[in-house]
Length: 290
Image (cartoon, rainbow, N blue to C red; front, side, top):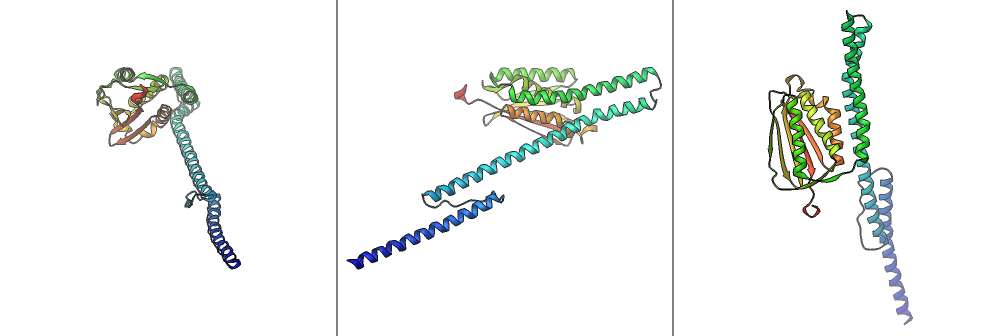
């Protein structure tokens, strides 16, 4: 009997040591993973083995690593967006600022020639100065609005009619012709902020007026796809601005991206040959939320 007890104890001790050895090896893997994460390797994953405290620790570490990676990716994207906005604002400010410097240099060197010419230079310099002030004021006002203005629920078809009406009036007053086609016939509802939405439309129309070729029609199509209302605008670009249209519109397009983001949508744009296109995607409320 004593022999059986001794053998039993031996077997138990051996099994215990084997289990502990396995656990120690697993703990070693977890320790290595923690070290890698602390050194910035966010692609470290620990195999979750078993169902105990150590496997729970491994699972939590994997989740923590994924959360850290998402936060860092979001921070990088935020930094990229901020840098792009700064670049776009600097670009849009440079053009009127260069004009102001030019007018002031002409005045300082006495090239105006007459009082009337001098006054004309002064008026144009003031006009460009006011343009710069509007750009900076719009930037701060817009950023504040995106954070504070609420989204309301609207009849999508009615809101769409208002948007198309505003676009038509703007383009007509600037000698452009609109070709509009809608493939959306069913009623729908969507969430939006009218102030931000009209600011978005104003920026897009201003871009058309600045770079578009009036002799070519502005083509606007509306459709619904995968739970989104899709507006696609295409217009021909003036030959002299084909190479600079997208860059010169950077500030306005950056604001459009922020507006669409605030309303849960997205915007994409591209220049292909002599055509510029913008695609807006607005989320449509699911039927149960209507």
